[in-house]
Image (cartoon, helix red, strand yellow):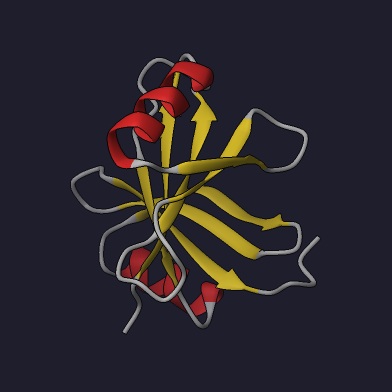
Length: 121
């Protein structure tokens, strides 16, 4: 079974968004890489829930995204297409994390799939 492992919230003002989510939910943020992207720690390790990220919005209609961890990204991508979905951002590396694909389901909802691989570059 493949479970959600990460969420992303695109925002116009990352500093204001981090202040909001920090105050309301006590989330902690850490800069990730050279881009305008911050990892959100939503709770202690080993407790229910997932962590995510706050990112600078790239276009006005950019939706939030939930990413599922999968064992085989190529096989899961093929299943998504076979089931009526579309690949909208092809396989790309997230250095030190793994390989990521963004898809839409048959109704156009965006989601990600990630195969963990610390050697991804």
